[in-house]
Amino acid sequence: VNHRLVFLGPPASGKGTVAAVLSRLLGVPHVSTGQMFRQAVQKGGPAAEAAREFIEKGQLVPDPITMQIVRQWLDESGGGDGFILDGFPRTLPQALGLDRLLQERNQPLTHAVLLDLDDEDCVARGLGRMSCEKCGTLYHVTFVPPRRDGVCDACGGRLQRRADDNERTVRERLEIYRQQTLQVVGHYEKRRLLRRVDARLPKEQVLETVLKLVQT
Ligand SMILES: [Zn+2]
Picture 1 (cartoon, rainbow, N blue to C red):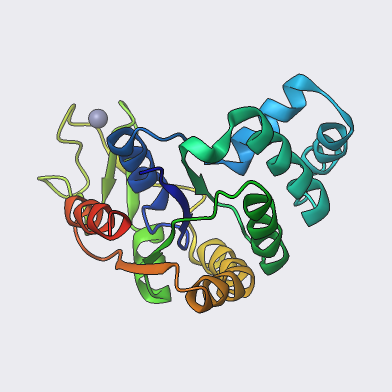
Picture 2 (picture 1 turned 180 degrees about the vertical axis):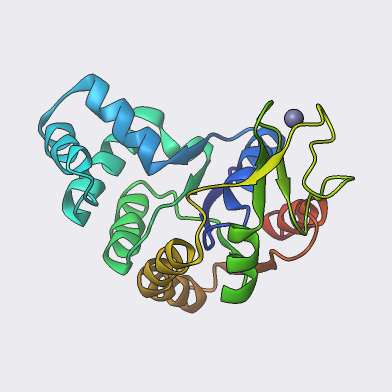
């Protein structure tokens, strides 16, 4: 069976990590749009040039350009052998565009996996991260606590909150995600491809659940 999967989920849902492990287990590539863009820019061409201008300005690449790059990637990778798309499609037009591209190739999506996490859990996870000042080891107040409060297990260094993790930033990212992705989720629900997984479960259990869901 070739798995052609889309992975959806809010920031801090652990989507990237789960997709990476699943990619090894299923033997299919795990691809983000970031990677597709980088590959395209290396090879050059008008779509890549246009994308690069937006990326350099720190703006989102518009849907038509994104779709051209996804098309190129599918042409070159022969996406029929399977893939896990991470962070794409982000909007409804992108989801419809992807459907068309895959339909042309007679290689429809097999599942869309949503790692579900409500806003409060996203914020709690996003805010609880700490790292060791000395060795950089990562901890989390709730999920990966150190043995002694504020002290690194590995080297005894002091733990600090991550600077980019203030509540407003986390909530803003979440708001953008909800605005864009809700319609994408609805689209896959209508097409009966959506599989919801509770991202509050421990990582091993999330993975186990996803594995089962994509194999049925
Ligand atoms: Zn340390």
